[in-house]
Image (cartoon, rainbow, N blue to C red; front, side, top):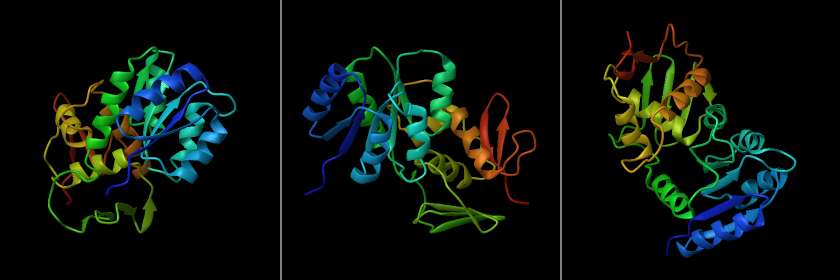
Length: 231
């Protein structure tokens, strides 16, 4: 018997927690909830949820700070809930490690659909069985889901790792945003395709890669992105 999917809901508005928990529970998922930022960090550490539904506006630590701390030890999928529709909030959230976001007020059915899409996302994109890829001084260990650069470990989120692996498996091949969404987010992803740009920018930063003079990931204007072929 497989373990149930564990979902942590973090919100200080009790009516929202009760509504969301009810919908998620009816899916057969194991749901728990906390109402402040510090409790959220501890709950992720102790309960190891598969998905975190995280409100941005929280007492104590806000959602962005919670996410920054959580990403130091967890690769749980995170959906941010924000009452503000400004693009900067979405970009900040994705940059610090969110996988998706919803703007309040939202439909609980849409939240369920977003979570289902995340859970169907492959932990390792389709491809060959190789244990690791060595691309110059960059090593991608597929089995251990670990990356090192010049012998030093590089900590990536699940989404960043899957993006890197998708591109690195086919050096020189151009991937459009839509193709990357299909490979990494899944065919049923609903949202802004520029989420790809935000996660790639974060990936480049962690690899010390300059978009203007890239060693690893190139932007092909009007077409998409590709991993540079090793020289």
